[in-house]
Every structure is written in C-alpha cells, then in structure tokens.
Image (cartoon, helix red, strand yellow):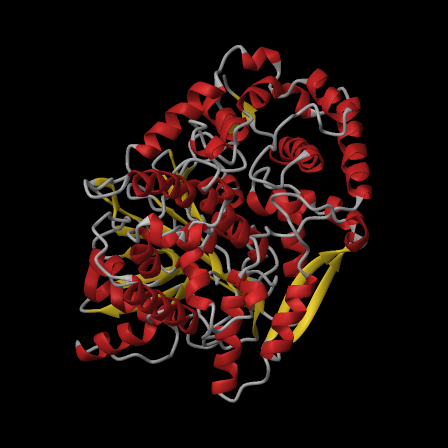
Length: 615
C-alpha cells in the first residue's frame, strides 16, 4: 500500500526536472511513510512513496525490469490477492521471480499479458507502467475503485497521482472550480460522479478502467462491469457459493508481513469478517486476533435510539470478542479532537467530505496504527447484499433521485444567490441520476421487484459505495494504514448481483440471505441484529463545538465561504441547531452537527486550496 506520482511528456525531454516529481511525491508522505523512490528518463518522471506490507526488500519501487531488449518501469498502489496463481502462470511461461512481492508479479504479468493483464487481476490496485522502447504508458484501476488514481493534461504533460494534492503541486496546474465543480460539491457531495473531481481539468480514472497513452494519443477503456444474467441456482446452491466466495475472499486478504487486525462493531458484516479471521489465526497457530472498535466519550450517557441507529455496539462487540477469543481494544474519541481533525480529514480527501464521519475514522486509524498496519472491515456488505433502509422504504424507492441525498431544494438554497441564479442543482442531479440508471441491464425474466432493486443496487454500488471506499482509503492512508474490504471482491459481487431480490432479501430482511447463511455459525443476537451504521458521537458538546467553529467563520467577512454560500441561510441553520435544514445532508448520519461540520470543511477547503472560481 503506497502512493505514486508521474509526469509523461512525449514531445519534450523532461529528465532535468526531477525536482518537480520530488515535490509532487512529497505530498504523498502520509500514504507511504516507509520508503520513497524515483525513476527519471527522457520522457517520464516517476515517484513512489511506500507503506511496507509485503516483502520489505523485494517490493521496492519504482520497479524496473529489462526484458527482450526493452525496459519496463512500474509504480503501484495496492495489493493483489491472486499473487500465487499469477506467479505459477508466469513461471510456466519462463519467467523467474526473485521475491515474494506482488509488485514483481504485477510488473512481469504486464510484460507477459500486456493490456489483457486487467482480466487476470484480483485485488485492490491502481498502477502505472512505462514502456521505454515504445514510449507508452499503461495505467489501470481496480474493479470497484478501492485505490484512487487522478490525472490531468497540461501543455503536453500527462500528470498523474494517487491524490489530487500531488497533481496540484505540478507547476503548470492551478486549482480551479467551475459550474460543474460547484454542482459536484453542493449537488452531489460528499459523493462525486465517477471520472470527475470538483477541480476543473483534473480527472479521476474510473473504476474498472485502464488508459493507454502513446504517440497515437490517449485511449481509455472499461475492462469490467457487473453483467445481468439469469440466476439458476436454488437456495442451497446459492448459499454454498456465497459462503465459498466470501471465505475465499477473506482468506486471500489475510496475507501480510506486518501486524493485521479487524474492525469489529458487533454488526453482522464485521462479525463475519472477524469470525473467519479468528479461525484463520487459530488454524495457523497464530496469536489471538486483535480486534478494534471505536466509541466516544459520554456516548453511553447521550445515545438516542433512532430508526437508523437502533442500538449501540458494546453488547454485541463483547459477545463476539468473547466467542472468538479475540484480543479486543476500544478506541475512545473525544469531541474536541473530532472537531479539530475536520481539517485533516478534508486534506486527506482533498475535498469537503463526510465531516466527523470522516474525522472519526481518521482518528480511529491513527490510534490503531500504533499496533497494526492492516485491517479487514465489513465495508460494502450493505451495498452488495442490499442492507440499506432505502432498499425497503417506498419513499426512497419513489424519490426519483439518489435516495441518500434527497434534500435538493435545501442544497440549492444553501448557495450564494449570485451563484444560485447561474446554475440549477436539480437539473445537474437529474442528469447524473438518469445517466447512471441508463446503464443498468434489466432482464426480461426479472420480476418487477428484482428489476427495481437492480436499479437501486446499481446506484448504491456506483455512488454511495464509492464515497465510503474513498473515505476508507483516504482516512486510512493518511495514517499509513491499510484498510481491506473483503466484501468488495468482484467475484462475490458478480455472483450476488444476479441473485433474485426475493432470495437476497430472504424472510423480508435486509441482507436476509447473508443472515441465513451465517445463522449456524454466529450468535443469533448478531444474526438478527438490525443494521446499525458506523457509530457517531451523541455528545451535545460536539454540536456546541462545530456551531462555534462555523459561527466564527461566518462572522469573518473575509472568510472565503461567503463567495459560494448563502450567509443568511447558514445563520438560520446555526440559530436552529441545524433544524432549518430539514433533511439529512447525506446518508443517514449527516444531520445538523454534521452539516455544520461539512460547511466548516468547505471554508477550510477554500482557504487551503484557494481554487479560482470560474462561472
């Protein structure tokens, strides 16, 4: 797990500009605290920051290999989970492997398979490979975009990096935001449209896409997508296949040369991950598994039961930890540090994000990093198996928009009136919504309910899940900490995608099939537990803290937030403790205090990145 940067100019010798790549690479220090390296050639500059997880000596980057009179150089961020199979295939084809690093396997696999390599990989990855002889660059990103990759063209330079902040360090690139960027920030945010960023002329390589760049220009291709096809397996066979794919995914992701743990909330998803991980440790004679959870000071005193958060986690965590004999640790966070870390969380994303839902994960990872470098989490199970309330709520299904972001009129009202009259958030959101739905494959044999749920699943996988994956990567890697997501294995997602909704929601429950599969191996209390999202603070001092922060910003007439947002509406939000914004800003958790925190992040972002506004 690492970060990388690069510049390619096919028309000009840039080998004397190494300082540019050094400065860009330095911006990724938090992603890769263990090592850094560079590669310089006439037409290419590459930089890499490394977090060591596998083979400290054999995985150094940039990695260069000479083969049949040509030179290939790789920079890579991620982890391959089918290294063993690839290694065997390479050896059968005459390649010698000198390490057990997946970096070497990836580079030599590209040399052997060329662009077809993407059809061979199982893992989380983004990478770039420079072919010296053909002056050609190949870049690719994993199936669901767990690992980020951004790029921009400027004056003959293709500039790319694992994070936007590194691209902005390139001397000829200026931070700008236009109408689309504002629509992304305040219409879609904290989600974003795949392939875009809020910054003008800075693009994201979409998940499951690759790029070839050479003298013929740039070629972008999608190499994988979820395909709809009839599901012919009965319930028993379906359970058997899901169980196998899930266990195989978890076991593949338990490989590490550094301390590994799991995040355990006591919910169904994290309990499944922890069950298999704890059994793996036991089977292989390893010490008991370390598990971690997050909580907040005084949450036990202030917790309020809601439809979305029906109970706290502690009882269920203890139940699972005792059953599996894990070495459990609770990380306690306090209100002041949650608010104080909002800026770090924004910098980690290079964007305003999910407010304290982000900063709490950032602090959680920071604390766990003292004792571990890699964790497995239950992230993505809700998206794959249908676990969110909007899969079942008629008001959400009939909303005609993204069901986690329905406060569209409130979002429009939040804009500075001078900007609001120049753009229509509803129009932009509608365009993106219908553009996304047009890509859903509905089968003739699909029941009405299955067809409907394919659509909401597609939206959830391609929008909501991307936001959470971005959160996991950025908050984890800001601490040099790797978060793995076994439920996001593309093989599992492919299979579950085509399971009819009536079977997926067995017994009318969210994730009903998954609950049924696990009923004999997990405690019934966990199997039957209603979904409870990532824990947030209920401490009233947090509202007070972010309210003070936002008030101070708004009272400063020179604060950049005034250039984008409606001061009068923000004052109304402040005076009503957030209730003037009548619906959640995003998802289930971003209500009053989180909205205020998001607005604080907007001001911090404008101050830190100083984007030029072009309307």
